[in-house]
Length: 302
Image (tube, rainbow, N blue to C red):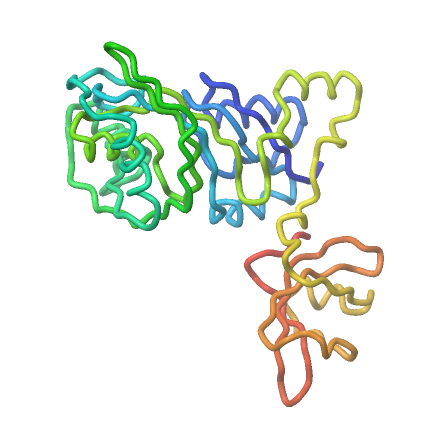
């Protein structure tokens, strides 16, 4: 089986757990997830099967969308509800100040990755060091928050809860965003809930639960859940090459084009065979006045 499966990961499972579970269901050797979700988080987890695993790196560059909930006034060592409380503060800010703090993070900002993360420093994962009580300096990383949309602010006597939607670039830690918003407000905060609602062109509404996948297995219709890998590249123009060029294209040779004057030099294109099978991505190049097609070595589907 080859294709992309959009899974709704339940909280409590790691992304690797989901992959291991699905490997048994689909009975495939090549399978992998396209972007880790923390165990406590739920939501959209793209899974690539078979030849589609070659597209995982493309997924990693996509922007992500989330719905998050944070609790003001309570700081934890993991920046989420899974950790130990290390600080509590009275929340004296009002809704206007909270809204202003949220909006202040729209755009690029330097985010310091949390200690409880899988980032490696000198060969050691940060969370392994954190569990030993060791904290190391982490270099800030530029991330971009393209949208923050407040959904609800609940202010009760002893608790202030903020729910919001956020669109962000790859590598953004939403629990760290919540922590940083709390620091800006002067009371601290931690992320209490997270669900991923979108990855690149895909939305949570397109996802399927593990229970639904099991039902399709029983009905023998697992293939119907898979999306073709070329759906990732729909923004590129397409072209078809004849049978005699297939071997050359797939092995990295140049393919001379005759009737493709509409393509620009250095333009990336989706390449299909006469039978409409997706072969991969190519790049148009001009040599000695001729249009040629050179294989794009970042992705070949076969």
